[in-house]
Image (cartoon, rainbow, N blue to C red; front, side):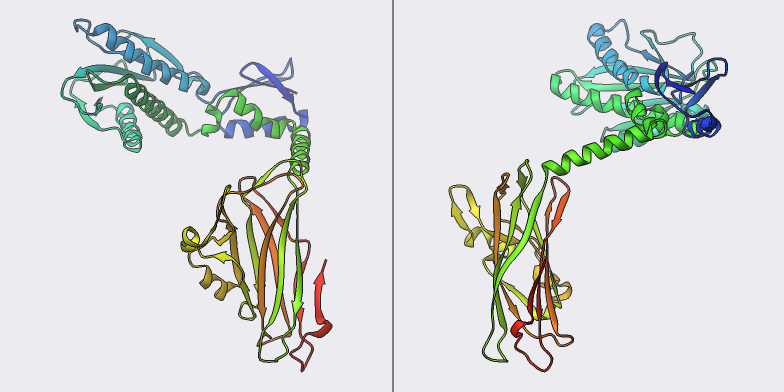
Length: 411
């Protein structure tokens, strides 16, 4: 069965899946039309058939009528464009009233006031009318979130033909063009969002069915063409992994203490080699030591508050490494975790290597005969990470504090 959305074909579904697929689309808020003779299913936006009248309310007797008319039209046109993908039909009117029967009637009036510091809004609605009262409630919520000052008034006379809501916008006469553009955008978004909230609450539909066709196509392709979508994801993943690759590994040497009471020393480095074709930026190194009390990390790694005074200055900025967390010492003591990053941003080009030098002071654990260091490198901007190819494992022989040949490097 061929499936259409907004009169455009985008895929097919097995005929045996049609009943379930149709119910799924209706649950998500889409309107469906089934043509059995042509074996087609047409999906329509969730609010198809709803009508909203957007009217200008400026007084024709005003000296600045033309200017206010343009300002009102700009806002209402933005609102109409925001609602287009939802299926709502917007009637644009330059009259204060219209004889057309609509689901909602909204009138916008812009006035220029000499003593207004910031744009202000007054929402006038029929308190007796459930529609305008509910829409006004959504408007107040949106205006509050957008930081737009707003006052409310209720209308005494009843309008039995339309659900009538009047928005009066007061702005400063000498407002700058950039300020007006910003306010106009916030007002249009808030008004369109309130209308969508009103219909969504009334019709109990998913807002997914009110999105633009381009977004809907992408969502529905997951259902209609899952194999193609899966293949595209796999191809994209393979392409990304070919570009973004790194090899992480430990190099180190053991210095055994002659005294049983002195800790042993490991001097080494963690190398990060970019083996991909795309540059990598700002590696975050995570070292995990087990058990925490038996291993102490040393080296030129600075606490965050000391980077300004102790870091090495170069033509490329501050060089070196720092602990990323203020409470790094506590985390090491409790969890055995070191989080380390570059003092200034760094770039690792393809086939280039960045190195963290370190020293480890190792003492025999209170329980067990083995200590271990593991390494991971994260590149947060690319949302990727790489574990070290090897670990540092330091083993003690039974009844002997000297490790001798039990020091091992696992690949």
